[in-house]
Structure formats: C-alpha cells, structure tokens
Length: 210
Image (tube, rainbow, N blue to C red; front, side, top):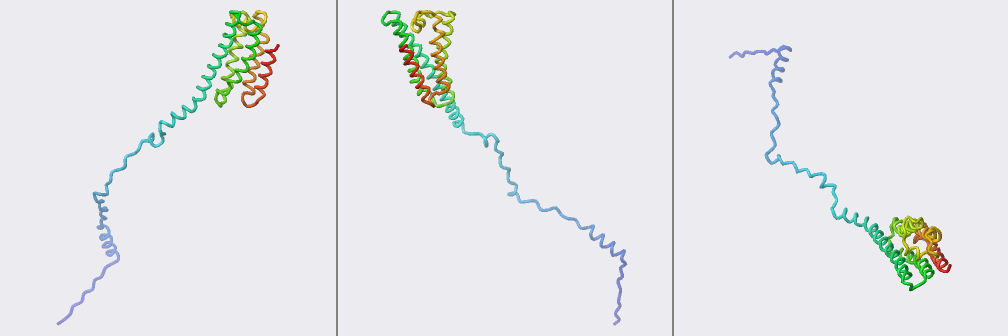
C-alpha cells in the first residue's frame, strides 16, 4: 500500500486575502435590549415655587409685627391729641361761665399741658418712630397758635384760656415758645434721658407761677 503526500502552500498575498475576508465577514450584533422592568417612568418634576415658597402664616405674622408699633403709636397720638384739645376746651368753658378767672385758667393750662404730655409717653411703643408721632401733638397746637396769632382764624376760647390780656399776638410769644420746647424735648430726649422730663416739669411749674 502506497502513501501519497500533499503539500499546501499559501503565498503571503493569498493569506492576507483570506484573513481580510474572514475579518470583514464578522458582524457585531447590537446589545440585547433591557428587560421590560428596566423601563421605569421618570419621577414627576416638582414645581420650583413649591420648593422655595414659605408658609403663608410666616408672612402674615411678620407683617403684623411690623405694623403693630405703628398702629399703637398712631392710636396713642390720637388719644393724646384728643386729651390736649379737651383740656383746653374744658378750661375755656369754665372761663366763659365765669367759674374761674382767666389768669387762673391760663396758669392751669400751662401747668397741666406739659405734664400730661410727658405722662403719656409710656403709652407709645419702643420703636424709633414713636417720638416723631408723639411730637405731632405739640406740633398741631403750634399750628393753632400761629394761625390764631396772625388772626387768620379767630378762636376766642383759645385766646381767653391761654393769653393774659386777650390779645391774639400773645399766642406768638410765651405759648408758642412753650409748645416748641415740648417738641424739642420729645424729639431730642424722649424717654432715653430724664433731662426732657425735668426740663418740662421746671418749665410748667415756672410758667404756671409767672
């Protein structure tokens, strides 16, 4: 029995061709799709307003705390102003009915006006605008004195209860200086220094005895 042998010879060019054909026939398959349970829905986006908004009661409480001192001072100013007007009107009525003399009425008005004004300071708040609202009371009286002093308006009751001789021009002297001192003490000293209260007490007592 004879054995035959064969020899396979490949040239470099043919080898490269076979390798090229083999490599070019390789196709990469796409990755498998994820299972159905992977497709989870996206979480809902919360609105930005819900993330940064504050509870409504915080805004209301801060607003109330900011306006409360202003309302207190406004109410105190109206109360003191009504009290000052009632004081002058009371002595005016007593003078017109000849229950007290005009000189005594003037002295009592000068003594009580400043002392009652200083005694009403504690009903104002501790805010910075309290002194300015309190000074509105003598400011209104100052305007009344100026208007009546220049005879733009004639208030016989005010003239009789404040002046000595019933001359309207007297309102532009002592009574006007009186209310200017009240304004100065309220704006400068207020409740921070006893100097204002002591000055008012000395002025009221000295003016009443004069």
